Length: 106
Image 1 (cartoon, one colour):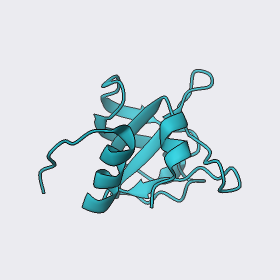
Image 2 (cartoon, one colour; image 1 turned 90 degrees about the horizontal axis):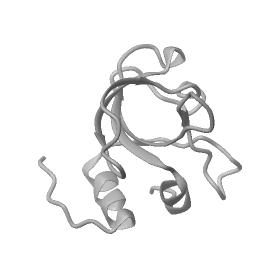
Image 3 (cartoon, one colour; image 1 turned 45 degrees about the vertical axis):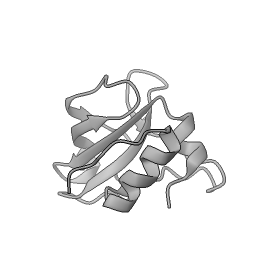
Image 4 (tube, rainbow, N blue to C red; image 1 turned 135 degrees about the vertical axis):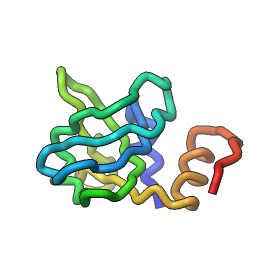
């Protein structure tokens, strides 16, 4: 279950894969859902704290309070930086939160 407030409050939402050890913060962006503003590989400072694992694709709500991307802390979850495995259900929830009725390829 995605945290609706975290999704809506994040300037960027990406579907991306942790391409190295999470402590490196490297994420290969497959799609940026709000602005279509991110592509390629980005670095997410607190990716390891969010519990990411190498090789797994996630829905990642991002903020950029300074020059670095960070997983947005989730309201009502104790300020934890939550990420979500990019399952078909998670993508469907994301689309519903963002008000999109797009067809996803499975």
